[in-house]
Length: 35
Image (cartoon, rainbow, N blue to C red; front, side, top):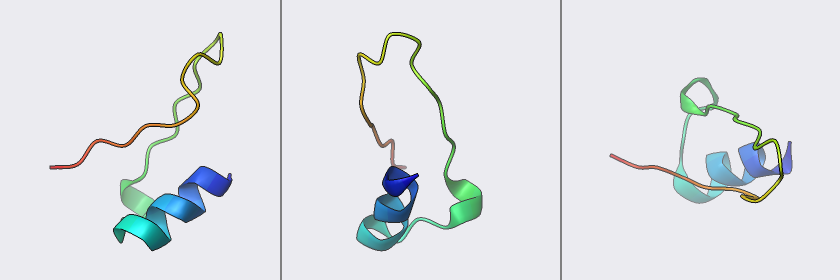
């Protein structure tokens, strides 16, 4: 939840361009890929 809001405000990413992926073992907390 909060990571989506952070990505939107910090990086200017549109909500429609943000994809949520959940790591089964929670090894990765959050990650961003830019083009």
